[in-house]
Structure formats: structure tokens, C-alpha cells
Length: 445
Image (cartoon, rainbow, N blue to C red; front, side, top):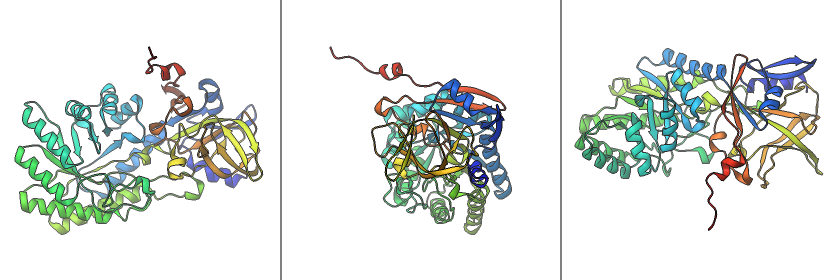
């Protein structure tokens, strides 16, 4: 592979990625760990997370907030990006809040020892089970709709013990520029409340004595230009001004969600920085508050992808190399079941061979998985060196919205997951087995 192509793809990988010699042959390493040796030990598909890359992303957010936002601020990790016991523990070592959706993610947070004030609960249609779990385990519930508001109010009036703080999720009426499936703020979105519905929710909270402390909105995931956040912030601030006048109520916290994107392919480099996103939101919010005579609320950002995506790498082994009249297929031992994003959103990825990543390019390749779907294609038309059956390929930027959306299609077993830190690899999620799949099944009589 030409050096410029190799160097062009390496910035997609975790910060600790190196090309090092092993037995005289260049190999990819991450955090000092040889990826080929990890694949031999733990099997493939295999997902790995680099601690330093995760910590650095959190640090970038904190530095930008300290620089551009003079008020109180904080970070909530969006658990939907990827959540397991170890990741939940990592969020607490970093001092993050944790966003959970539903009772099962709350159970992970509780098992990890996440303190109640650090747990925030989302959900567009929370079940009774979800709500009761949130009442027991969460510090904040983000209320999505008036039906939920009424249910929570009825429970509060019957409860004598502690009750979580509430935030209202606004629907600002416009979305950021991203794939339609990941837009959330538009007028007809299933998420959040209109201006009038949110006003009714404020009235219910004040009437019944619920602790309403925040406002939240979210306009979409994996966007690259923060500009559309401006009118949504104006919408939220105008709502706050109206509620101050009508009900003498002000939120302590304003959360404009997360969704800042990441580069998945070398064509998307360089990607706008975390600092650029934080600077825009911070300065626009501060200016908007000044213009309206509002004190600065706590600014709570909710990143997921921009923390996790680059830190994760997926390793696959090539099983078959197939040539059709117009394509060279590299058929892998994973794909759609562990990474549905290309099929769902047309997401583009890149790749490098683990052994000899600097080999010269020979032809474009299509990287497909083993599953019975024509849409099981991870990468299309990517320049690659000569690849043989048995070769290992590393696909970068696999840390977010892959394992969390994975499935057992065709009986696929979910991959093992490793945590890499300064030369050490730790198993944080074992590989699923066929026995695991059978545990839920019951025979006919």
C-alpha cells in the first residue's frame, strides 16, 4: 500500500496505533498490543477499545468547556453508543453522568456502581417497568411527552420517598444535517414535546410540586456542522423567557444533547474538532442568555459517538476471496450482525490489513459478511493490497452504534470485546456462544 494511503488511513485508528515489526514483518499494534496475536488468542470478529483515545476525547470536551463556557458545565455519556459493565465503570472514573434508556441499561449502571445522581434516563415510550426502574435508580428522568408527564405526576402524588428530578425534552422543529434515520428534532419527529405541550408539562410540575430542573433537546446524530443548533438554542431560550414570565420558573440545566460526528473514512478527514462544536454551542448559549437577561444555566453536553467511535476497532478474518465480473469480494467472518450501520445508513468505512499494512495496492475490493442478505456489505470499492484467505483486516472507527445495535441474525454470536491499556489487553465482554442463544428457548411439549 503506498505510504500516503497508509498514512491517510492511520488517523482513523486509535491514538496509540503504530506499525511495528514482528518477526521482521510490519504489524498493526494498538496500545502496544499486537492485533494479530489478540485475534489468535480471542478469535474473530473481535472488538477492541483503546483507553487513551477515550480519555483524550473526554479531556478535549473538558478543555473546550473550560475555555468557552463561563458557567457550570458537565458531560453525560450517551450509553446508547455502547454500554457494558466496564464502560459504565469507566464513565465514573472520568466523572461523567450516564444516560440510560430503559430498565436494562439502568441495571448495567447499577451493577457498575454508578451513583444515583449521575444517572439520567431517556426514552420516547418508557414502559411501566422502565419508569419504576428509573424511580429507584436514576437522578434525572427526561420526560418525553405529556402522557408520561401525567403518569409520573400520579406516581409522585402517591410517593412519600425521594423522587428524581425531571427535565423536559423539547422538540425544536428543525434537525441537523445528517441521515434522515438519525434526525430527531424536526417538526414531525417522534421525540419530544412541542412548545405548547412543554408549557403544559411545566404547569403540571409546578401544580403538583415535582422537581423540574432542566430542559433537553436533541436534533440528530452524527452531524458535522453545529450551525443548526443555533435556532434550537433560541427556541429553548425563548421558551425559558416565556416560562419565567408566565410561571416564574427557570431551569437549572440546559442540555442540547450530543450527536457530534466522527470521521469514518479517509475522505472525511480532517473532521471538525470537538473544540469547534463546544465553542459554537457555548458562545451561542452565553450570547443568547445575555440578550434575554437570563443567568447562565448549567450546560450539560451528551456525547456518545465523539467519545467512543475512534477508540474502537473491529478485527475480521478473511474466509473467501471471490471475483465476479466487476468486483473483488473479500468475505469476512462478521458484518451485518455486529455492524448494521452500512445497511441502515449507508455508512462508509475504511480498513487496513493487520499484517503488512504498507503493502502496495492492487485493486479495489468489496468487503462483505457471511450473512444471508445482499445488504451485508461493510465496505464498498476500497483500494486494498492483495488479500488472501486467512488474512486479518482491521476496520477503524467501530466504537459506537455497532455492538449496541448488534443482532443474532443467522444465529450469529456477538463478538468478544477487549479493553487495551498500556500494553495490556483485558477481556470486558466474552464471546457469545450457541449455548447462550439457547438459554431463552423452551421446547414444545
